[in-house]
Amino acid sequence: MSWGRLYFALQALGGAVWWITVATVPAVRTLTLGSLDPVVVAALDVPLFVVASALAAVSAGAVGRVSATVATVWTALVLAGLAVWATGTGEAGWGVVVMTAATVGSVLALALVLLGRVPTEWLTSGPLRFRTADPGAATARHVVATTVQIVVFWGLFLGVFPVAIAVAEHRWRLHPALPGPVVTALLVVGLVVLALASALGIASAAAMSTKGAGTPLPSASANRLVVAGPYRSVRNPMALAGITQGVAVGLMLGSWIVVVYALAGSVVWNCVVRPLEEADLEARFGEDFRRYAARVRCWVPRWPIAASVGGVPVPLSSPRR
Image (cartoon, rainbow, N blue to C red; front, side, top):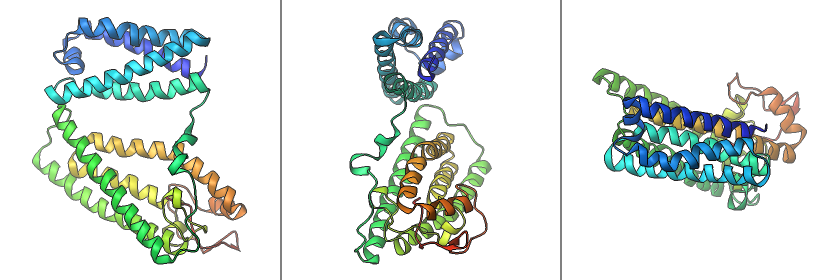
């Protein structure tokens, strides 16, 4: 059995257990469905979620592919419907959390069933495909472009999205009631961590734009392999800074879901974006990048290394993010 079909088998089992629990444990029914009529929901969900997942697990060929598609589409529709219901009524917040996890799992499993793999390269196609910045542009132009990127991405991923998540967390009644001193302590710690992480991100961006003749964005990436600034201590200081910033914002908002959002972003970056990015760097910089990667760790900083790798001078430019 493939990993995709195995997932659908586990999903079918989990769905069946959940419905049994909904029928026998009122607290679970309230937390995940609120005042929705479980009989009406089950009439649709059991065949389209539980049975379809089971068929996707045990059936090969067209039946398995169609069943996996039906289960995935239905899971996404249930997530959307529950999110609207929870936002409007303040009920079923935990149902949204559960179905979010199920939707992510179903989409990944569907890719495995249909394609035999998860097509991560799609994330770097079209306007997001890997391209170097204009090597003839003035350094000031790269600095301005990097500044704009920071404002936009920090505004969205550290401002708009976390605030929206925190509001939903409160509306869906998933926010824990914390004592006042705890809220204050989280705010102070979050502010300190955010300031330190932001300083790391700015220093990394400065090294990228001034030494690398490019920007942190893969579609306008550095022309030279930077080992200056924070890149002398860790290969991915901007990713490390961004993830830490996200956790800090979660602490400031007192939102456990925002913290999970930041940590989930780290998993996506490490498992999806980083391999693609490092493959691009190795293809462009060859042995220089391989020596650099052998000396400097991906996530855990070390004492700064010299601006050379393995005793051989390396152009001062950097692995992005």
